[in-house]
Image (tube, one colour):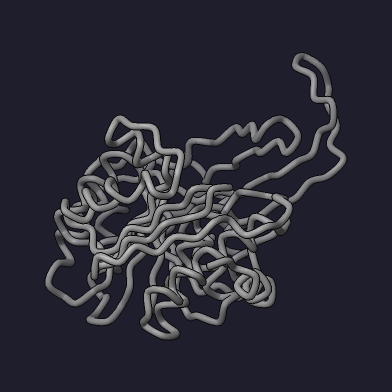
Length: 302
């Protein structure tokens, strides 16, 4: 079973406001409400691709109730912990203003909530996959990712981490099966600017030397690179298509890679599924369906 964790999920309120003006009343011409959060996105795309998974995390208040309702309505398996204070955040996304967003805070996650999550994670068994993705609330320790991996060491659990900066670096010593930084995040870690697929390879290798098993690097319009555990480099340009919505594309890439790995246990296929799935979501208003993914998969170069 694959489990995803979203520490600070949200209701994403996506609106189109042409000619948005500060200090004035603006009216939407398009609006959409979605259950948001990187782990939830991964679970959603896995479901679309026919792979079973369970979403874990924290919810609170009336917005938390709506998150659970929407996940249930979508047929997403979930086992979220309800927090007694505050409410799950609402993230406002303005489609017409260069990706401008206003993200909420979310509830305070106390020690009891963190202990409840660990109790659920302690039920994972050999062969399970755990996906930790996204930011954490300020109320949680910055070591939470590494604390979880340390606690679950030696159980045969496959770890996947999609996070930035110290959240990512601190888990490398526990040898996660897959990490998925983008080229900007790798550049920030090593203090370099990476503008080609070839330039990413030595730095992906450094992350492997620090402990990662497989390093999957998303590069937006430049494509993607995978350095697998055998030392083989896989690289693809971005598939041709119209960018509609980049939100969730990276999460989709993770879900596609895991789907490909479950299907054939071959890194080349897993990589191609990751690239195809991330791109298919970017070409769609919603997260990609399997039909959309396989259409892009059949058009990949290389």
